[in-house]
Length: 416
Ligand code: ATP
Ligand code: MG
Image (cartoon, rainbow, N blue to C red; front, side, top):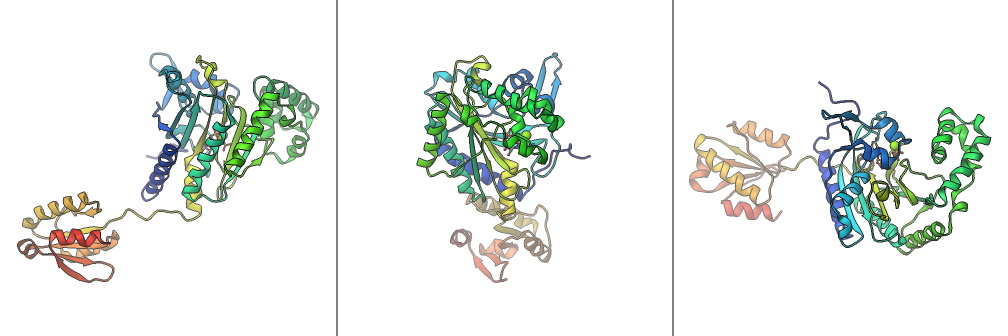
């Protein structure tokens, strides 16, 4: 049997790195007042269709959708924001002090072509700030938080790009203008862009096709068409980033792949990832809550691609050591086994990692095994040790041996 295409097993020691990344996220996010939300893996298909948008790649061709036994259509979640908003409304979070700050970590599902940094089951670390206001300080702090997280992990080559894509007042006018300009050069565009030009012209700006670049460069920039509110908000966000010492670049072609964004959007790239180099995407989505039947609620958030984050950390040599084993217990004789079990229990309770072989082995074989596992000490327990209460401890690196009582052994290990 084989795992399904685009899915994979995460094994030790790599999983230790995943744990460290997630633990660091929890620490950093907690210091910014975020609480954890855990969400269902599948939801009504309609939730994603309404929020992400029917014309997006994610909804139109990448979702894992099936009809449940009661005829309702359900989908594996392709992202977390829609579920967070559903939960905000359903669980009455508008009654809480605003803004509500939430994060969540877990698997997402999109049927994409698998390649390095792109999987069908992948993992996101997601944070959202819901309610309160659209004050640029909220966007500024959110971006500062993700940059702090990356810095804490030692991620390299981190680059932040920002843009404003306007709101429901100014964006439709810009989209029409863009569409009109694109129509003028329609014949020179590829089939994807020709289609997107009609369904979702902003996505054309995202094109990576070499021969389209020059044409796109000549298109009108949204920054010149923002309404007063959006222009002021965008300026405010840039000022916030400067105040917080966050370095950024502006990219007028940065549009996100999901329809719900408005105003400030951003993307963060990192080193060692080839063409799949975006490790985080995010932005403001002030209209989404109403679209889902909730009260008008200003909101902003980001999603980090955890698989890519881990890949980038591995590229720069941040690979974790194999699982640590402090003590290997080489025991011999059925009479000794009970003492070995008790010793393992008390050493583990004291925080040490202990390997206790389940069946009796010859000493030579036991020591060889201890070596292979990379244990630092072998605790040798035979009849003599048990009757005298003096245990033999062998330091595997240099082969030295000493006799220690159980309390002395604990002291000895603690000192290291
Ligand atoms: P991309 O342009 O790389 O497809 P996206 O715009 O579809 O990304 P978002 O929906 O904004 O991505 O998701 C946020 C982050 O999740 C991305 O920046 C990326 O790191 C990660 N991500 C998205 N899709 C995948 C995938 N199929 N496999 C691994 N990571 C992914
Ligand atoms: Mg994508």
